[in-house]
Length: 132
Image (tube, rainbow, N blue to C red; front, side, top):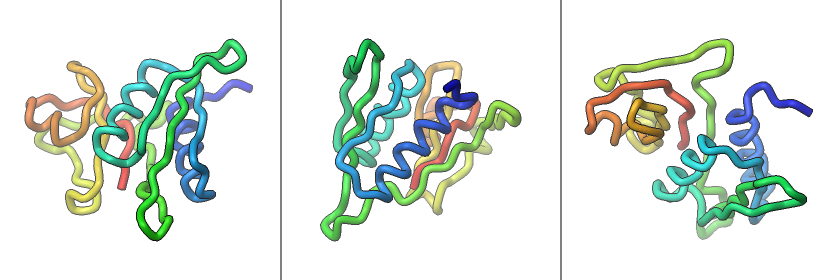
């Protein structure tokens, strides 16, 4: 099975696993996916992650995070840029997600980062996804 948008596939797997209250989810590894997962970890949306080798394939095992009432910390994950419609933004026009309570992940010339850090560095780029 070939996936035309592997980032959207990863986000869907994480979203579905969180809704089903799974402890962890495995996604195929890539450099961009690893950077996105690192941002999810530093922003506090997931507990932890680790790279594993499963049946000869490199995977990222993502450990999901839940609050005291066993509700997922990730309320929403939405892909912004798609293969058919790329969305770019300058650093002055980066969107705010849920009035600042969410996070936008941006692929800039200086690497993959959050919208807040991209605005501080004064670099724009391609909007990958939003998390709230």
